[in-house]
Structure formats: C-alpha cells, structure tokens
Image (cartoon, rainbow over the protein chains, first blue to last red):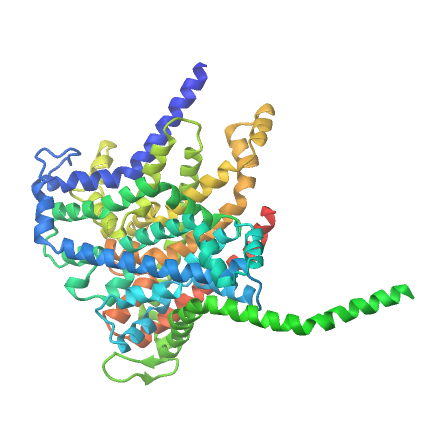
Length: 276
Length: 317
C-alpha cells in the first residue's frame, strides 16, 4: 500500500514536470503580455507581473492591423476548409469504394505527393500565379484547396473504408449510381471525418506562414502570422510586451479549439498512424 | 468426357462475358476518373508541372525582370563550388533533421508513456502536452527569443540557480543555435502528432503480456524492452518517417521566425536558402536548382519509406 502511494506520487511528479516544460512557453507569453517593457527587462524575471498592463492588449487592438489580419486569416480558413472538404471527399470516394484500372498507381502518387515539401514546388507556382495576375491576392492561397490536398484525401479514404460494403450493394440494388451513393449515403455517414478535417484545416491555416509570406505583400491582405512577424521585425527595438500581447491573440483561439474539438482533432491525427 | 465438357464451359464463360464486362469496366473507369478529376488537375498544376518546371528553370539565369537565359548546368556548377554556401546549407539541413528527428521521437515516446500511467486527471496532462503543437510557430518564436535571450531571458536565470553565471546567448551563438532549435522542435505539430500516435499504439499492447512479465519478475526496463518495444516498433518506424518528412517540410516555419537563418548562415537550411535566393535575391534559376536538390532528397527518403513500409505492414496482420 505504502509502495503504491510512493509510485503514484512519483508518477504525478514526472507528469507535472513534463507538463511544466511543455506549457511553460504559454505561461510565459501570458505573463509577459501583462508586463511593461521595463518589467520585461528587469532582473530577475517575474512570473507574476507586479503591475499588470492590460493596456498592452488595447494597444495591439488599436495600434496594429490585428483585426484586419484576423479577418484575412478567417477568409483563408473558411476558403481552404470549404475547398478541401468538397474536393478531397469526392476524390477519396473511388479510392475507397470502387475498383478501377490504375487505382494502385493513383494511390501511390497521392501518398508520394504528401511528402513533397512546398518549398520544392513554390517557384514555378509563384510564376504561374504571377501570370494569372494573382500575386498580392488571396487566390493563390485558396484556389489550390479546391483541387484536393493529398493528405486530406488519404484521411477521407481511411474513413470511407470503415463503412461496410453491404451499404453500397443495397444502394445499388435500389438503383443508386455512384454519385448518388456518395452524396446521399457515404458523405452523410462520414460526418465525423468532415469535422476532423475541418478542425485540422483550421489549425493549419491559422498557423500557416510560408505561402502567405511569399504571395502577400499588401498590409491589408496579410494573415495574422505574416502580419505579426513583419510588424515586429520592421521596428528598431523589439517591443516585447506588445509582441507577447499579439502572441496571446494568436494562441488563445487554437487552445479553445482544442478544448471544444479535442475528440475530432485527436482522432484525426491518430488515423494518420493507423493501419493503411 | 464430362470433365472436358466442364472445362470447355469454363473456358467459354470468360469469352462470352468479356465483351459486356469490358464495357462495364470502361464505364466504371470513366466514373472513377470523373471523381478523381479535381485531384488530377491539382496534381498537374500544383505538383507535376512545377516539379518539372523547377528542373527546367534550374538550367537558366532569371532575375524576373529580363527574360530567362539558358545556361545549362551552370547553376549546379555554382552550387557545388566551394564557396557557394550550398554545402554548409546541406550540412545544416542534415544535421538539424537528424538531431531533431532523434530528439522529437524520443520525447514524443516519453510523453506517450507518461500519458499511459494509470492516474487520475490524465486528460489535463494531455492538454498541457499537446497544446503547444497547435500554436502558431510565429508566436512560439516570439516567446523563445525572449526565453533564450542572454541578458533578460528566463532560461539563463534558471541556470543561475545552478551556479551558471553569464549564460550564453543561445540563439545568437554559432555552435549553440542548432541544439537550441532542436530543443524548440519538441513544441512543434509533428511532435504532438507523434505523441498521439504513440499514445494510441501503447493502449493496444495486450495487458496479459505485462501481467506475464510481472509474474516472471521483470523490471520496468525489461518490460519496456521486451514487451512494449516490440509491440510498438512498427509505429516507431512510421513515426521516424513522419518526423523526417515533417522536419524537412516544417523547418522553414520553425527557423525563419526564430533566427532568419542566422547567426551568419548557421541555421540556413535548404528551405530558407531557397526562400532567400528566390524571393529576396530573385535568382530564380539558382533557387530552382536548390529546389530540385531538395526534391531529390525528399524523394530518396520517401522511397526509403516505401521500402521500409513493406516491413511494418507485415507486422500489422
């Protein structure tokens, strides 16, 4: 009995130590966002601000383009999520529920393109979108979503495969064609994976830095990531306190999303490692 | 006699049905490829053609102002010459990738093992362990620049408790910046993803195996070595590949906001070098040569994955 208590306390101690390491950056962001610039530079550093400066948040809200950045990020999230849900769910259908010539090749290509880093294809894409006259617009960041992201196709396929084949046979006997089978039966049954990919896509586009950094120069079209980064690197001295206040605005929404959609987020990620 | 009759019928059936079947099959293929058409267009426009175009562009000089000029393999010659910075960039990429993969895979496994302890409130711990993974790298870069600051950083302050006076300037020191960034990579999405995958696979290890090991008097390490490890080894392999590809793909978002490739070129990984030469120096040909090399690197790793995946799939069934 005594030994059990010791083991349990040891477990809690270890669990808490790792929790502290992982969560410390978040604590520090919040702590520093409430300090004055003087307090941030003071030594030793304080965990709990002596003179909490809620005005930092107001200054960011009023003094920066935060709300415009936020609007742009939301446009990217909605556009990409709608686009990828429609296109990827359609593309995954034959891969999971039909037999056709070249299926293995197509699936192998989809798996292979999942690995290609965006830096390896960005230059020709940049030139192509330039020819379309799309530089400094949000189009290059949204339109590709409507042509199916391989990773999401893979997740949809994995989910479709868990639906029994007998569902298809019954529907076919009732005279459904593949399109009707997809829209009336498979897609409605796949609600959970639609939500999962919606959540994953939102997290991705909330955090995405590389592509908007390349396509967007116009201050009024920048998403949060690019806006925050360029806003603070153009100044001569870093206003750490305002930087941290901006960071608070950037970290709270994904944390809330995790709290409310934890089940979908965790399931989606685990599917990646599941049996192929 | 009866036997040969059956044989003939068997031979005839495919011949009779093949015409109708072929027609049906053709129709099925048409439907399937209609469903696939968004991906086919996307594959051509956003992967296939760009990869080929990148190679073609790598054979030119182009500053985006005057028209591109064909120069053959000059960009590659330039790249492979001693003073191009490419070798340094390639070295940093490989060094960072290897170290980061090893550290993040081990760390993700440790966290998953901890989350499998039978204690109350594990959901809260999972929140703390996983949440950094979904936060923007830009925000994390801001706070780590502050934490690892030489004068006012809290990390050096904590070191001073242990007698380390005048701690180093972690992100500005040529030899310390890579280890520091490798440490910061435990907060990335890839690490959180691996932790969840490990966590799920640990739950599937049969409990009887542990009980049997306990009866045999196995220590905690022996249980891990002989029960846990063999059961999760396919997932471990999968995660190693995920971490490698994730690190190569995600290095830009992690490193650019943190150091911008500096100090000097100490963290100028390939993705950053491509970004700088293409979109800041407008050397499109040279940058395309770098892209081509990065693509080949990733293709080699992906090929390795396919070769290895044959092994881990056999574990599953």
